[in-house]
Image (cartoon, rainbow, N blue to C red):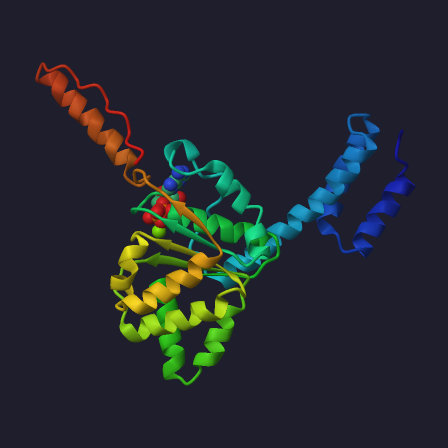
Length: 275
Ligand SMILES: Nc1ncnc2c1ncn2[C@@H]1O[C@H](COP(=O)(O)OP(=O)(O)O)[C@@H](O)[C@H]1O
Ligand SMILES: [Mg+2]
């Protein structure tokens, strides 16, 4: 069925009127394929609406990247699950459907450096931002510093409100740098406010048993962990550093060369440890 120029013009007019630039840009190509009999009506409608949704999501993402302080773009598609067998793919995929944000649950990624904790925390934040949720990212040190500055300026309650507002807050790198007792108290206040109010994604290279040392207060750490874990998805990653994988491969290749030169039989490559 061919689409007349008049119909085409009318459709373009309606898309412009509805302020749908994504669909407007795609409509000629889609109608061309309809004309050529390559695309049916259902597909055409779905592609037309899909073009608008993807433009809107990209805009949301750009705005979120500006306001959320996310340090990089990391996505689920860019995550190599085969490299990290201790991670349950279904668990991560289901978290990316964002029901946990609806239910105000938390996510905690634990594991040694380089295993993808920050990557997955950011990809959850990006999925949420694409879904129109307000997100905010900070390392524990950044967040505490901003609370301390606000406190010094007499604006603590305003800053706490700002950091309680996002549907998803990422608190990255708990455990890398020491935290002052006053800083830990401020962080506790923030997490107390967010408890059962909005979701937080936390990452740490330290097990919960060490959070008392990290925060300089065992009792407060226990109270914090109690709140965080009350409604929580725990992702414990036991594996090798992705950052080191190229170094490891290079090291093995060099060693094999040296072995060959020395007339030794190259050792069989050892299976990667998964825990
Ligand atoms: N399984 C993986 N697939 C793809 N990239 C990964 C994977 N794990 C880690 N990376 C990448 O390796 C780097 C280190 O990962 P990161 O998430 O920062 O580790 P962590 O926060 O656990 O220290 C990042 O650039 C990240 O995107
Ligand atoms: Mg990290």
